[in-house]
Image 1: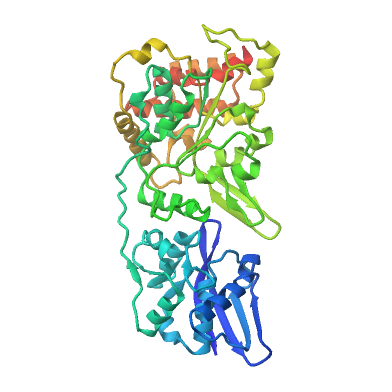
Image 2: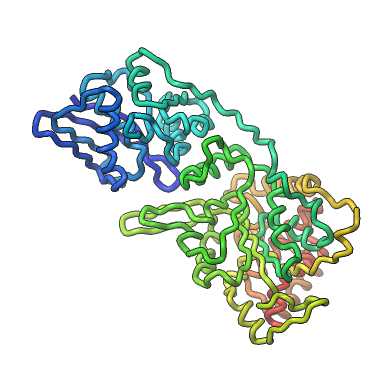
Length: 510
């Protein structure tokens, strides 16, 4: 008798349906798994054998062949344990195939038959709904995560015997109700807020513009000027995640194994801050079986790179594709996987190696050549892809002691959300979510300048020898500033402010 159990594997961030076909035939005892299984899948033979025996069943002493179809898709991970075990029980005749219909099964088995959580269960649950199956059987530890998906029944099990009795009609599995997550919850961490930052009005304004148009931003300032705190406050003024964005973000974290057992859905924008010693594979993603890197884990959120020039040059240059396209493609000999990577890049750096260039109270010990060499670690093409460059001056200690109320993040977020709403209506029907993603054609359509504003911009381009890409970046930022002012036209003042946000371009040529 041949048993067929539906399960799934994860490819990129999506699930692919896999049929576990089990055949038990007369012959010398053997247990073979075919269908391009990786080492972790091949090892499931011993886990399945021990789990079935320790659950009180007699393991068949015949020839067992397990085929994972389609056979041209590489399978990896431990989630095949449970469907293989259930398939063997069905092929033995202990379970009827009619009872298994409409159920997708995924989970890892311990040697004693208990069921353990696995990574990437959310894409599998989404596939269950897409394939029209009514229920999914998962480990109890994955139940809340799977229950995020609507219109399917999520059943959780702690032991193989529980699943056996359920399909025999002699017991029940734990049913997880649809998880109605609060999408109107906190915008970010509760321990940071813009009202905690004293002074730095220019930097706050620049971050507001960046959040309103999803622009990348580079902050240059001495140590202790507040660059890190400003960056950590940025998610608190960004628009709240929608349900579709939250599901997509959660899928990536689930595949990476970063979703906690009590976390069903990520409802706050991610904030990733990798160390400058990170490799290109760690930042972009990679491995024998490609996994998402930091740029994908920051999808729909913020990627903060502190000590920007200290990152390896080839690592920084690898950011070009995700910054331009909003995704990253990792190619291998037999396949290529694309991960989403639409994030806001926030970079911070010192003005010079010692960090005190331009500080009125501390003298800089760096030579001009050292400063130029330090800043030149950031390539011109990468710098062009960063819309906003600002200088963050040292904090005035007197401002820290003043009890003057600062504008909270909630008030700034309302203005940002209003500007984003304007952009959503402007780009309705297009694959554009914010001004920063406009193409050259879209810029020509929505960023028309009156003669005085155009004259000012052309003069700035000639004076500082800005590239065509930097020219377009200024237009995008000016469009965002106009949106914050609820202005359809881009005025001369909007262009002037946008030009001020190219500080590093001007410093490199003066």
